[in-house]
Image (cartoon, rainbow, N blue to C red; front, side, top):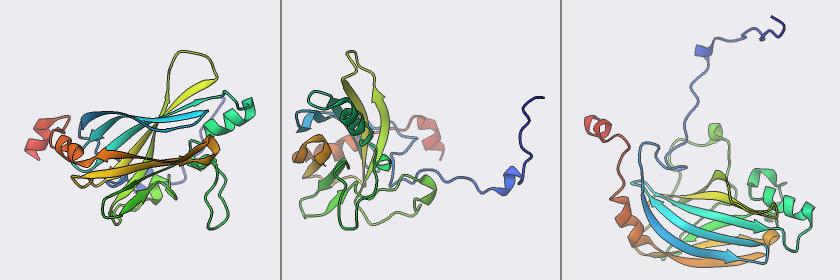
Length: 214
């Protein structure tokens, strides 16, 4: 054998199992979710449009599915590339204490009683996430990849999931976005919380027989 693997230093069984994503951070993997068509344009600038085409309701929360659409337009090739990379918070250098990076794309929700949850300061290391639920509500930023579309290289669509845990109150609440680097000022739209709660009752498990036996 030309290339030989390194000898094992510890038995595999010695390592504790890696914890899965906790329920407050991501949708349940056993559940299908019920889709609501939204078709909301959350924010728009000369180079960026953020839309919310659908919301998927689960028994434990809802996944707000956002499309971040970018075009080069007035940007240089370097600035356009940097803008595309800054969709991902872990690619952005930390700002000074008490400040938010200009390149940070941020989302948030606010309920009628003034309670808020935002994606600012989110960790992306699953090992370091607490398994026990934090104080609700929580809004987690999840990534689905880049949507393949026809056309030139001067435009792109990134798929972003916003997991809101737990389910919102059955009343209208606010969804907000802001992205200074993309020219997006604070933009707020209203979301029907009652429709989300109603849809969550239609969410079913992928394997109903397992749920019944459990």
